[in-house]
Image 1 (cartoon, rainbow, N blue to C red):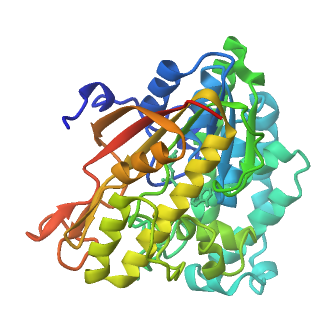
Image 2 (tube, rainbow, N blue to C red):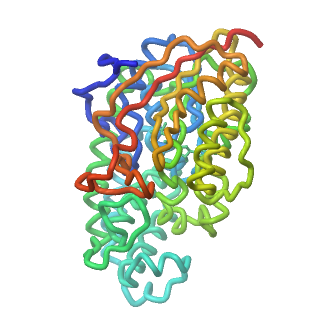
Amino acid sequence: MPVNEEWCFKNARSTEQWTHGYHRYPAKFLPNLVKKLIEDHTNPDDLIVDLFAWCWTTLVESKVHGRSSIWVDINPVAELITRVKTHPINPKVLHEIVNNFLISFQSYREEDYLKIQAHERLDYWFSSAHKGKIAFLYEKIDDIEDVYIKNFLLVALSNILKNSSKWLQSSTKPQVDPKKIPSDPFVAIQVQLKQMLRKNTDFFNALSTSWYIETSCEIRLEDARNTTIESGTVSAVITSPPYVTSYEYADIHQLTGFWYEYMNDLSSFRKKFIWTFYSLNQDTTTSTKIGQDIVNQLLEKDPRTAKEVANYFNDMLSVGKEMHRVLKVGGKTCIVIGNTTFMNVKINSAEVISEMLMSIGFELKDIIKRSIPYKLIPTIRDKKTGRFSKLENSNSKMVYPEEFILIAIKTCQ
Ligand SMILES: C[S@@+](CC[C@H](N)C(=O)[O-])C[C@H]1O[C@@H](n2cnc3c(N)ncnc32)[C@H](O)[C@@H]1O
């Protein structure tokens, strides 16, 4: 199948536009792509849902287009960031409180914070001097009464945690950089807030002039396999699920997760996520023929990955059924998904998911192939070992050079 140039967005506008740039995150859903799906497949009164909403792209774009939307994701850090990204604050009020917050740094006394109690994993990532300053910032933010402004500042603090820690700056995987000089949290948060204040003002002004500021945007921290969305109410699902063998999504925001006490134990947190290497599921059967062929080939090479891939396909079947339940008859699902190769086995997730959709009552309307111009996703893998690798290695291969957009319609109850 040839690449469809219309969907490649080679001159894509910045993924940092509007409030998209508040917080770092990998595997961005390209705003242009979501914009085109919304414009081609939805109408102004439609309700749009993203079941793996992660970096909130679908919600911000729905709001800019005046469509109501529901965000679903299992990650509480993503939930916090989404609340802030989709709720612009009156710039005048915000500036005043942020200024007072910045002035309060003058009252910091290091000796009061050197013995603070925080999760043991945080001792691993932060020096005690930086830990003290972060604890102070967290305490000051907690004193703020206005919940929108409190959350705005929590997002600012969350986004500087990596810079102020020993985490290797260029890596999304948890890895210490022994040579790193972490940023001072007081300096880093000032820079971060300056940028966020500017973006908030732009977003507030843009939405006020188009009257979309009141467009509803619901946020539900739930499992995509089993949501509380009412049956038959949704016009379109626009989503990009986790890609098989890609990120360990539970690990990416662990610094925030531990600081804000969203989790205490990483291994049980990981088990809630679709696609993880740590579910340790033992099942090797899956419902579609193409999916089972892939699992059987993997079983010969790497049984653990075979089980996790079978688990992924079975989870995606549950998600497909949930999509079918929440959609109206005639409603559409638009799924962006990538195929990959692991130890020379082709994992054609797009084909597997298409087969699943048809088996549960969807009619497949279109499959669009697009190349990925820019995406912060691990791209190179060693063909023999399956490990992430460097391009200079002659044995290496692009992991996700292109992806597919599946468009399917719910034709009956
Ligand atoms: C690739 S991201 C999705 C990309 C996203 N659509 C965007 O805007 O870039 C995958 C997301 O799936 C979420 N996720 C994983 N398991 C989930 C589950 N069981 N229910 C809901 N969300 C889940 C992760 O937290 C992560 O945010």
